[in-house]
Length: 558
Image 1 (cartoon, rainbow, N blue to C red):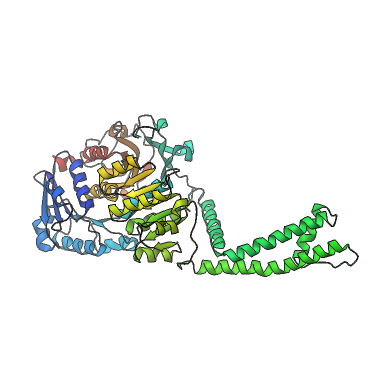
Image 2 (tube, rainbow, N blue to C red):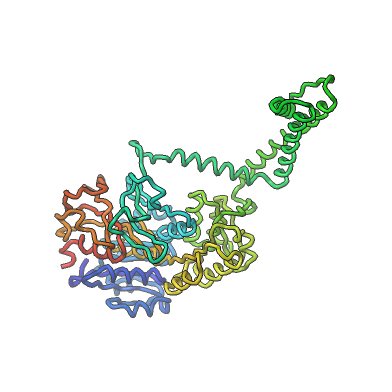
């Protein structure tokens, strides 16, 4: 609902996400909004919230019916419940629903299974996960070599990637040009100048993604080899190498001492090692000696190979145990196994990147990753000994995503003491600190979870959907799905009218009813926008504010 021509939003939370959501809501409105924040007394963001214009702060330890009534949730456009705890958010959302059954709810949840079923309890709710929104940015920063981020457009799989990683005919839009020196240029006028692009993922007629089967087999073979290698203990490996070396020496001996051709030498070695020796007392003593030795080696190597296979199978069967071997080189070390850390580890693992997870205590994240069979180390994450055990000195990148900025920074500095040019990705809430750390520490990248997630939550409160958040340097690009409302400024105009240099680029237009909408990508320039069409845009934060205003129903803003 709108009160006095102004939208009214209610945010219930206690951390930096609440503050950044409020800032995004204020920035996204050109006609002004009323924002009410219910937060715990003495929370870290109270004073900064009070300093904002058009923001009312209600301090309450545990919001009850009286607190939500005081916040006038019945007159709100939407209500966001963004506490860290899933159960707390569901409980508060049910309270709001009883007071205002038709109000739009935005609920922060982490548990994937719960998120999919929450509409049974809360039919007007939009469910978002902070960790799912932010994790791709940390993964991209950790991998470093190339950017590749999936974009979930229903029925139209796309990917954000470096231009040289996709075929030219699959490029949909140029997103950014990243010069060697200076800040990146977002949404350049010339698509061909962009080195970061949005591209289609080609599909077959039956809807299967091209290359999926090949990628699946590659993953299966890769994982099988890793499990086999993990089962190959050092003692078995040494014994196997010793016997193989003896077989090679036997081949050389047949060729040189017994005066045989190399082909005959290999032939006799293979047969003799398989136990198919043919005794011949008329041969020279040297040939008989070599044949006997090769036969004995062959008899020994068969049970040894059997032991290796069985040991690898047992290792794979009990891969969730803490004793599983850890990678020693070329892996990514993730420190801090909260919600974000677990998502980062999972996404790295899905990409096939070797990963070692580290946390300072036995928590749910440690248990979950061990069940997945991933190597986990529990210990003080700021000690050299713990990071050395994780082979940080030879890793691909160190990602510190704990909840404590100081601990994350200290972990990064300890990692740098082990290797001067180590790539470090830090989770830091303070923007100024993050910028100074990046300038001071080369090959360091900092990310703020709330900075990455807030635009998606703020857009959901306005009934818009942010499809993906794409970090580009210290900036963020948003891929959003925006509906054209009644009497909107853009209604009746071509899609190109929605574009703004360096701020907004139209990727496509969903036309038709929501359940069977078809994506025009790229949109036909001669076809006009209609009420109910949905624009898929790539935009900066300010650009998203502009496109929201131009697509909003004029009856809602007049």
